[in-house]
Image (tube, rainbow over all chains, first blue to last red; front, side, top):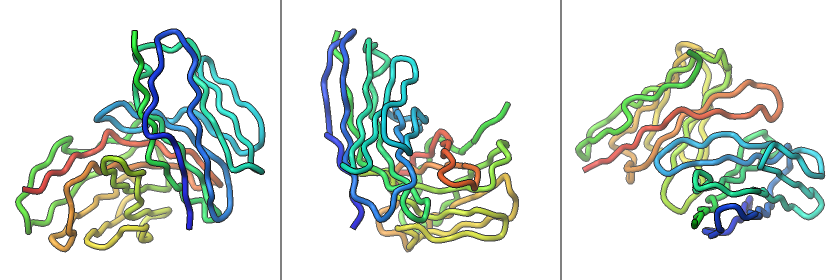
Length: 109
Length: 113
């Protein structure tokens, strides 16, 4: 079967750095997406990785290792507004998105 | 103003009633999707459409129906056959190129009493 694993919840301090991991087992791979979702709102797109390595976008970076079936989202200089759920999704062999359950990130002052 | 609209934001229905959720987009995207989100679970695909007058079942299509008569619109009907309809429903759109990013509407929270 297809599976995406992420930690359920993480806590970090304002101004710090946090890494949210995602491991996947899917039938085929056509890229990995990270989305941010604030409570009660829709997911918003953060990043897309299809090749191995690190993609940097301001305070957010995303890393992919296809051989390990592993990705992480790195958030730097955390702000209170970064309190949200972070969703990992993999595009499978049919280009359908398989979604993880999301990681709820709690930022403390 | 470009975007995806879903209405209403909150919807309450009695058990046994059918209800239709609207999704409209002016992004000129060919593909449209309906997802359901339940607490502690990933998004689950209900139906998707890549072209007008054609749509495909997702993983949990039972108890739902859709139509795609116009490129801009992809309404979802939750029928009385759906056993647990209370959920957050999200509509998304994308291009049809390989791994095009999906963009989401604001969602409709349906509560069946």
